[in-house]
Length: 232
Image (cartoon, rainbow, N blue to C red; front, side):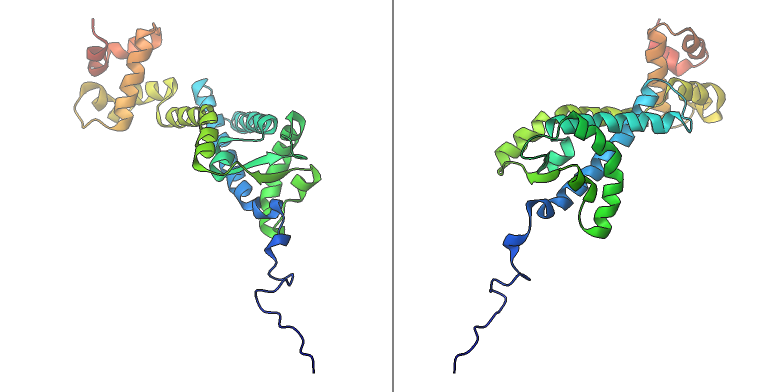
């Protein structure tokens, strides 16, 4: 009697056939992580840009600044197929073996937030598929990976600048702290231990006074510590 061949875990059955896993499915979570980090970076950059421009946070200005930062990141990511976080995750975005292009990059700015949610439910990215986009691995090896990261250093510089702007006071915050609060008075007169807020506010006051800001010069005149730093 002929016996039927055994079909163990080493067989070519479809259940365990890894060769049937598409490149898109294999790297979709790499792209998901990169997109989440890119979106978070855009939020920080938009907020930092608002502070750099000394604009007040309003229900309109905050989302607008963050949306513009996200559109910019998406456009550049579409033209190049890469972002800093995609490079770190080891993937690039492609369309028919080429970079997605500006229009697809901008379109993806609107579809990605929803795709991030759908990916967790459907285990695929239907809107990226609709745009003909998918993730592919970057050239393997530490050398090419580091070289690719080096090309994305401008993004890292922008992120670092945004974080710095978030942790240092704006002009309005400095004036409020040094001129209208008790802790600011102690900071100006050196009667309390120097805190981060005190140090950065004094630094900002001295910089603005040196640049000729009349309003800040008036404040520094009543702030002995800042006046001593400013000099004669």
